[in-house]
Every structure is written in structure tokens, then in C-alpha cells.
Image 1 (tube, rainbow, N blue to C red):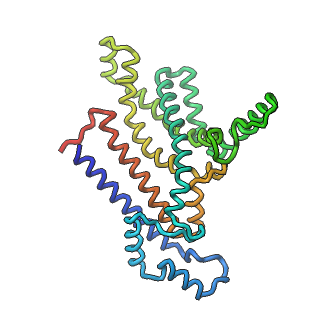
Image 2 (cartoon, rainbow, N blue to C red):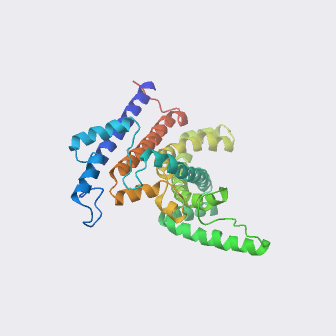
Length: 319
């Protein structure tokens, strides 16, 4: 077990290093500079001063060594397109908002998706199974911004308007924008979590149906074990393995935020900074956020690998 953990940690470090290297050279392969404005208003002298200030006039290998050294120190540099703010400061300010939104969506999506998949498998061919299929189709095929618009209209405008008319109050039950109190988190968290619900419900249903027909389940039934014990101790526990594998990827994708949802609901998260930094050719911001995202996702996958031995006692790493 110890050797397994050490190998996984070393593999995670190598993965992060490869992402850092690829991101650095891809950003510097883009034509132009971060200070290319699309016109010729900047003089050559001004451009030279800016390139020297950020060390972009040095040989590429020196820039790479400085970049890796700063990353190891926890210094992501200074953004070139956000008022010369520190990238680390931007992450500390915006990421908690994205993480808050993502965690709410992940908790809702995980619980709802797993339970829906279990019920669909246990009642195959019945209404709850058909409901699971409908939810999966909607969650996978309908874009998140479309779902966001629908729920903003129905809940944010329709239901809140009815509530105001019925109770003669200006209280808005489901606000359609901004990120202030718990009420403001309901619609965006639900919309962002729908993809997780759809994916996990479909995967859990398939996995449960495969487990239900196994010999050890039939043996447990023949011993007279209660149905509840069979479902949770034998069927659900073994069906969770593929779900946990996918969940690790979902954690990294959902918790790091969604640019579309954050923009649609005016949420001050980290997604907009990444998109804007790419279009602005902000080297330090793009590289810093990419490395930060990769660290978060790799750690999520590492956590999933370590959870295998907890969920399934059959998973043991030998010499």
C-alpha cells in the first residue's frame, strides 16, 4: 500500500511538471506578444521596456528556468492584463467563489445522480427508470446555458413573480443573478450539477444492473440476508467502483468552475480570468491558472486512486 501511494504521488508530480512545460512552450509559440494591441500605436521603445520588465527579452530557456523556479516557490507571477495584479492574489480572490459554486453543484449532482441510478436499476422498466433516462438525456444533450435560461425564466421570473403577486412582497425567492446569499446559489448550482446528475445516474444504473446479476448477490439472497443489506453492502458498494473513477474527473471539472454559468449568473469566479487571459495573450495569467487547475485535477484523481482500497477490499497492491 505504501509503495502504491508513493508511485501515485510521483506520477502526479511528473504529470504536473509535464503540464507546466507544455503550457509554457505552447504560450510562447503563439505569434505576437502579450502587448500586441492590434494596431501600431505602441512605439518600439515602449515595447522594449515592457518586454524587459517581464523578462520576455531573455532567451527562452532562461525564461523557462525562471518560470519553473517561481512555480516551485508558489509565485505564479504578475498578470499583464489585470492591472498588474498578482496571479496568486487573483486565484485567492476568485477561486473560493468558483469552488463554492462547484462544491454545491457536485454535492447535489453526486447524491441525486447516484440515488437516481440506484432506483432506476432496482425498478428497471418502471416510471423511475424512464425518469432516469429523461434526466440523463436532458443533462447530457441540453447545453448548460440553455438550462440556465430556462430556470431563470421559470423560477427566477415566473415563480418569483407569482410569489410577489400572491404575498404582496418584493422578496425574490430565486434571484436570477449575482452571488450573495444562499438563495442566489440555488439556480446556478442546480444547473451546473445537472451534467453530473445525468452522467452518474446513467453510469450507476448500468453498473448496478451488472452487479445485480452476479453470483455473490444470488448467494447472499439464498442465505436469507435482508434486501436492504444486499443492496447497500453487496450491490451498491461494488457498483460504485466505475462511478468513483468518473467522479474524480468530475470533481476537477465542476469544482474549478464554469465560465458559461459564471458569466450567465454574474458570478465573480475564476473562469472568466482564464478565458480573458487566453484572448489577451497574458502569458503569466494563462500559465498560472493552467498549472493551478492541473494541480487541482491531478490531486482529485490521486484521491480517487487512494479511495479504491477503501471502497473495494479486493483492491490490494502487492509487491
